[in-house]
Length: 96
Image (cartoon, rainbow, N blue to C red):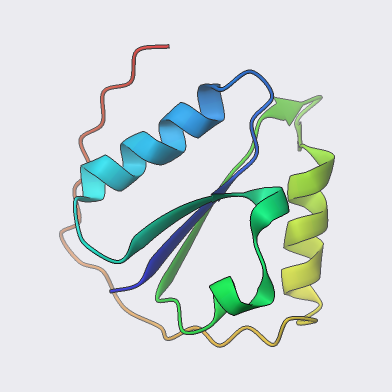
């Protein structure tokens, strides 16, 4: 399974969570990238996309918002296979 974890982080907390999720899943094929570093080729043939963002006033960061808008407009022609994940447990401990 090819998994892409995209995050934005102002003080490093969301970045720590993104890497903890990667470790918690513990499978090969997981890539963690900062939202500004994601390119269209990173989005091809992914099975699962996880997006994390700091929140200000109940809204994601501007960079995360732009990224999500870009995906929703299909400007990158995202081709994602759909999978049903059953019985998935993720145990993550993060010390901030």
